[in-house]
Amino acid sequence: MTSALLDGLESVFGSDDLYEVLEVKPKASKKQLRKAYFVLARRFHPDKFPDDEDALVKFQLLSRVYSILSDEHKRKVYDGTGSVEEDALSADPSFSWSAYWRELFPAVDDAKIMSFADCYRGSNEEKEDLKKAYLKFKGDMTNVFDSIMLSNPLEDEERFRKLIDEMIDRDEVPFFKPYHDQAARDEREKKATEEAVEANKVKSKRDALLKRLKNKRKSSSSSKSSGGNDLASAILQRQESRKNHFASLERKYSKGKAKRSVPSEEEFQRIQQELEAKKSKRKEEKQNRNKEAKGVVQTKNKKKKPSGGKTKISTTKKKR
Image 1 (cartoon, one colour):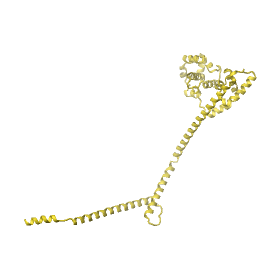
Image 2: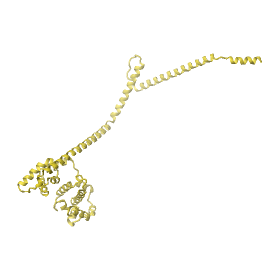
Image 3: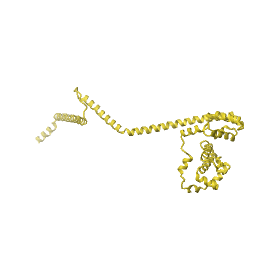
Image 4: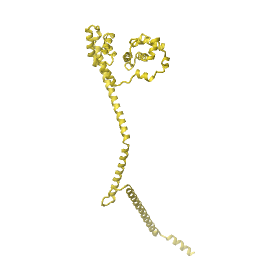
């Protein structure tokens, strides 16, 4: 641990003792350390206070403190010397950054959260946490809800108040005036309702996106697996097109003759060639007829042309 970190803890939290910062005892177990860290990290999480620089600094310092105490090697160094150098981390050959981040931020899904919530809600651990939070914040239920894991004013307000009322009746805790602040309760429930609506919108968008991605992958997989079927379908469509084309030609040129069966590929090609040959022959005959007609016209024009000029010239020559 560097002196800069110690100074930062002293300045922000009023103590440079790692255990005091996490609000646990020096003999705390890994489970207790993890729970304490998650509670404090949730209280100062940047997503909760996006514009609060102090909350961001506290969150970062808490993460560094937990990274030291959650590591067995570094915790021993700290317990024995009161400080941990940065080089101690890289000097440990067994240290794994990937394992460290998996421990610090384990993968969490809805199923794990619900499973943990089912075990935590209504447990003695939750009751003890509620009692400590009530005493610490002197009955301010808004801060109580901020410090209790997985708590929701819309779902847990009445349940928490029933437990606290029982504690007050048994003189386990004193009555604090903020405990019955109705205006604060109304504001708390309003904010929780707005957050629930926003959360549902985000969840709906996420579910819709996941559904589209799933359908896209399914469609892509189906397209790859049916590639042979698509080729066969294309061949059949081509054959059907040729069949229809041949039927059209048959209706045009058969002139009432009996229908023939569908030709084979070779027969179809032969028929096409014969049709092209007939077409070329008709075109050639037409061109020949045009040439003959043009020649007849030129011959007629020559016969009609007068020859008087030449006769006069020859008569004059004879007289001389």
